[in-house]
Each structure stands twice: as structure tokens, then as C-alpha cells.
Length: 346
Ligand SMILES: [Zn+2]
Image (cartoon, rainbow, N blue to C red; front, side):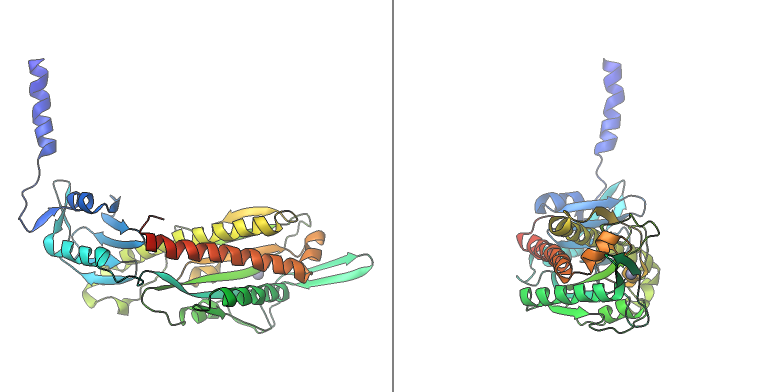
């Protein structure tokens, strides 16, 4: 017994050792305990995200900056790690407190703009469905039905959100390149606390005439983009660009998945009875990839399926699809803005 105890005690003592503090710093965990904030730690990269409600502050051990709400980089005394304990300098604690607790009411993140991208257009018809029904030929162009759906969706969103910008990549049969679409969205002016969501609308085609249904795509988690350009970051911190971009990417993916889920739920409710729910997809489409914002791509149905083509040729069906996407967007916006107000976690 005595022998065993003699062995255990030194180990316990070792584990309980607290590194000598300079007095100007405290263990980060102590700060989290006293504030009720959450920490997500990435041991491999030694990066972490502190969160309270919808506000976040990300940092990397030893780096003299904080990334606030995935968008604003501010200088600070670095958070360090000694003997396995994260140490928070007093001045950095003050910065965090000011950010998380002294924020002005109403200045929290909100959706400032919704960008609707009707796929294809002009010389690019998208997919084409040709069917013979009852001796009559039905020819369906993707560019037409996605434009009609987009305009219906835009009308509804304008009425519901008079305070938000509702923008389109096109409102007529004009041609835009894939690059121009996200560029247009990126040009929209937003306040510092405002986010923009990007919704691309397409229709599907398949060599298999039995394929039918709707699906929603979002940005895959492993795709890395350059969200923060070099000139936005101070000259000495260029090497941190990949880290900052990874952090931003993570957040946009979470938002994109949420938005995609809400829209899919809306589609299931509106047209699930007549079409098939093909689920969420996470491959990346070019249009969605290039947008620096939560983005989804909605495939509203197959123009190559005889029955679905007939539905898609009917404006009443397109109206239901627009309604479904609208319901999804409204749910997403409510979640995005209310979660922050309540200070709850997403
Ligand atoms: Zn398309």
C-alpha cells in the first residue's frame, strides 16, 4: 500500500503543477470558467476558437493577433502554452472581454443581403429536356425555369425582408460567366456586422430517364479558398494567411450546411409528395466555391424525367419550389440572427 502510494503521489503532483505565472497572465481555462465561454481546441495546428453565442474569437498559440467573428484581425499579446496550460495575458483578456461583453446591442451579425443566382442564361441554355407527351412536344430549357423560380423567390424575399438587399445575378435571359456570378455578389456593399448568403438555382439532367428529384449542395469542408487577401492583412503576418483562411472557411461551411438543410427541409415539405428528396450533397460546384459567403446550390429537379419535366413546365410547381427555398432562407436568417441575440450556441 505504502509503496503504491509513494508511486502515485509524485505523478499526481506532476499533473497538478501549475506553471509559474508572471502575474500578468492567467490560465485560459480559468477565464473560460468565470465567463461561461466555450473553447474549441485544435491540437494539431495549436489554434483555438473561443465562442459566446454567435461571437467568436480565434487565435493561434504564440501569435500576436485575434481573429474576431471570422472577419476582423486585431493585434494582441500572444496567448502562450507552458507545460500544457494555455496562458492568457491580462491585456488580451481585456480585449476579449471588451469584444464579448461590451458589444453594442443590435450590432451583432445579421444577414444584410441575399444573392440569387439563376444558373446559365443567354447563349448557355443549361440542360434541355425534350419529351413527347400526348402527341405534343415539350421542350424545357434549364435557363428559363431557373430564372422564373429565381424571380419568384426574389419577390417573396423582398416583401418579407424590406431591410435587406435582395440581388440577382440576372433578371433576364442574359449570359454571365461562372466567374462573374460570385464577383457580382462579392461587390455588394455590407456593413461590418453583415453577412451575405448566395443561392444558386439549377435544374438537373441525366442519361437515365428515370432519375428525378431535388437536391441541395454546399461547400465541402476540405476545400480551401483564399478568403482574406494579402492586402487585408498587415505585412508581417503574411504567413498566417492560410490559418486565417482555414478558420474562415470552417465557419462558412457550417453556415452553408445549415442553409442547405433548411432549404432541403423546405423542398421536402412543399414538393416532397411529387418529387424525390435526393438529399444534401457536399461536392463543390464552381459557382458556389468562388463565393466568399455561405453558399448553396439548389437542383430543383430533372428536365430529363418525363413526369418531372411536365411539373417543371408548370409555373405553379415553380412557385412551390420558390416558396420552399424562401421558407428555408427565412428559417436560416431567423436562426442566424436570433441565435446571436439570445447569446445561445448554434
Ligand atoms: Zn445548371
